[in-house]
Length: 152
Image 1 (cartoon, rainbow, N blue to C red):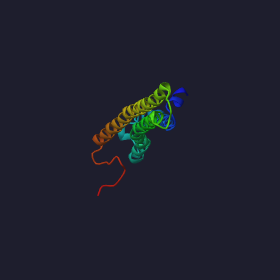
Image 2 (image 1 turned 30 degrees about the vertical axis):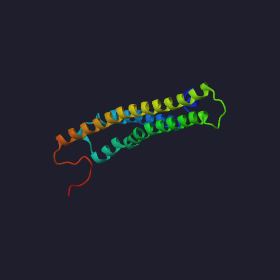
Image 3 (image 1 turned 180 degrees about the vertical axis):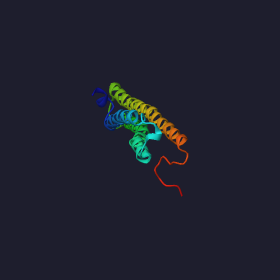
Image 4 (image 1 turned 90 degrees about the vertical axis):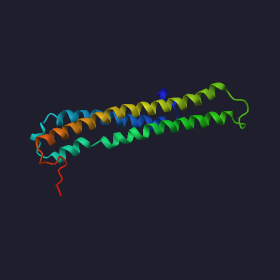
């Protein structure tokens, strides 16, 4: 809770992004560990399986994209706060208060980058596992299509 206060209002969407990211990662681990135990040749409906394995990955990719932007937004708002304190409108400024704005700026940037790095690691892991499974499936049945769509 201290980080939420120190990081300013931008920390709220960053916190929510991290919660959604963690939920997706945990859920995907369970789905992947269960689904990938089945050999590709034994899958009855590969299209449905591949759609199920892809579910959640676009949301994880969105978090990868927005977390650093939210962090930079926090940087901008923190620096705006600092410059407001240093402007002519404020008679005599408190260096401690200015340092809080700089701290807010750096904290939100760091949190946004940490979220993006973690999400990227797991997104790449899940897409790699999905691609490997698709390759195994394709190698086992050259005439089949893992998406479940008919060939033209």
